[in-house]
Length: 107
Image (cartoon, rainbow, N blue to C red):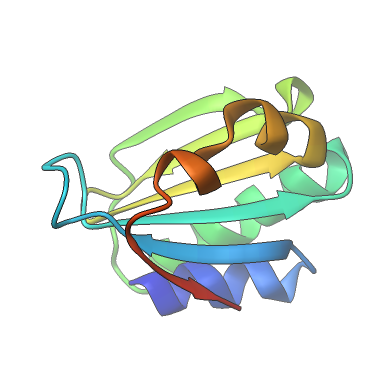
């Protein structure tokens, strides 16, 4: 599931892509996938790419929150939650440091 989302993000040139294994410290989800886009249009393209790839792999989108125009989109697939940000919003939410004590993989 994580690989599917990450591949879709990288396909649209998302950057600073990380997966965080949060399953040992929270019951919310097993993984967060974090990624940045250069602008609103790129984030919109990344969202479309992730949704298409995940649907093709039969992963069901449970919740979608935020809008590319707001600089942040969350895609909740249950076992993983994908967070897509502009650089400014990623710095503002600072999930990278909020979850600093979990296992991380950078792509």
